Amino acid sequence: MTSNTVIELDKVNFGYTYDLAIRNVSFSVQAGDFLGIIGPNGGGKTTLLRLILGMLHPVQGKVLLLGDSPLRTRHNAGYVPQETNVNKEFPIIVHDVVMTGLTTSKGFWRPFTKQQHRQADAILDKLGLLPFRKRKIAELSGGQRQKVLLSRALVSNPSILFLDEPTASVDATGEDEIYQHLLDINNTGTTIVLVTHNIGIMSKYIKSVACVNKHLHYHPDGKLDEQSVTDTFGCTVDIIAHGLPHRVFQSHHNCKDCHD
Image (spheres, rainbow, N blue to C red):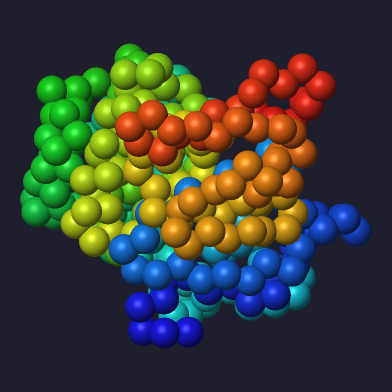
């Protein structure tokens, strides 16, 4: 592992039962990368993310995050879960959701400082959410809720950011806006690891790609050929280009696992 490596997996296996969900995965991610993780439903994308964050533990192999066990280093990482995991009816306002991203640094029993409150407002302002700081989370659109979760992940100034399908419940306009924010964050030096089903929009922003379907095929240059994606998804795909690289699936009538 080099000093520039922020994620390293070595011969990692993981399974919930006798069937392995992740098989013999080895790869590393360098600081400043923008990694896109793609694959079919049930292929292990979210499982891989949780292994890297130490939320799951491999049955074999080694996982390092920021040079050490994820249990010791994940406080330096930000995490944006799938929007469907959010309880939209919970009576909490936007500002307070963002403040929960600072609980690790302050401890559960100590009050937040004025500086931490200003820190949260600064992140909300950067993402265009400051006018909504006193709104209940249930009153926001899907895109606004995702930006709140992104703000919560960013408020502690993490060196690496993990996102699991961050635009799954967002319209096209909100999707572009969120991806542009991620690009801006990456351009400041923050490493980003993104699980997504949207290969088309992802290709405008990512630097490297991991294709996951139990096994992992890593493409450090971010370039995918038709065979690589076909092998991952088990479906024929078209890869075309018009201005920017753009990967598009054909219509799939016989493949139930092609879209997340």
